[in-house]
Length: 365
Ligand code: TRP
Image 1 (cartoon, protein in one colour):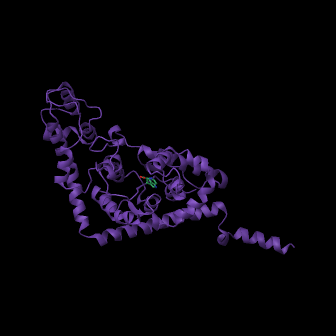
Image 2: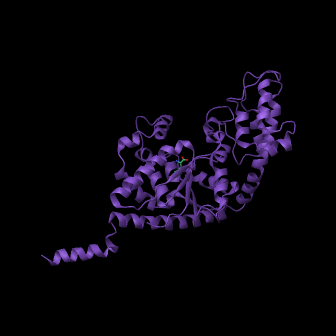
Image 3: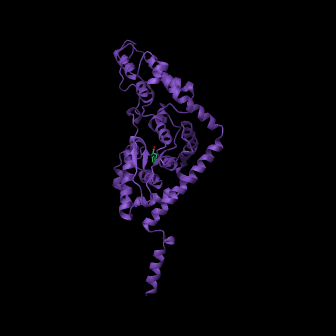
């Protein structure tokens, strides 16, 4: 086995522009990891083939969003000089690896995957599940192992995928000898970042619910969305005591605000704990908290918005960046597949031993 490098791999399905939920849940962390200098290689990819597993009648949606997500990546500070950004469908080796992995997983094992179970319900797939969708955890194991990823930074909903990938690696290595690397999940640190609720207080930001703040939203759009955000429905008068739990404005502050924001925009309070305490006591109006949140969010989003606008001016350059990323990614995956074929002894044409063995067998007759 090759020397164990520290390799990050993670990705997103390009089914929509990225929003601040993606940002606090993963993008912000990826940029930190990228700039930490602690990793030998970083791969960030758009899982367009996986997106097709539940969008097969909507391929145009996926196609259009490949560039949107690439722009969001670049805008957030993912730097192609430090991270390889690529598109899943352009790496045929991933299909090949998935095909071999399929022999290592049972149908009942896939049926037990809680994330897939929930997704099947959400998509009304109960009566007829596309095979590709059903088996996407296997293809995801191929995504991870083809790049010998040691570290996969993802949300908690991806835990079953990582578990599946680890099982596949163990099974493969047991049968064919130490070949593949077992990946580790890297979960978000801050509890508020595990899953950011929608602006309407619903559990998840989702395009269809219209409760997202997108990274590409204008300052005006962000302002408007914050003004209409869900808070505590029983906090009617300013003097009423308010609830923090389930109060989306405070959840967002948990995810975004830092002590220096208070110095800058709300110097009457030393920190978030004091602001929360005042709200709970009563005497603090929603508008004041929302204004503070708007200031905090705009400060964070403004540079992202500006960078995105810059990249939007040269779209061919973005596709060229992706093309180069795919080239690098493909060479890496091809290298792993060569190891895999060798381990499986299906490398018939560069296996001199096999030829010699057959020569001997036939000349003995
Ligand atoms: N399933 C992931 C998501 O929906 C995307 C993804 C596909 C992925 N392959 C991956 C993430 C491999 C990490 C590693 O967000």
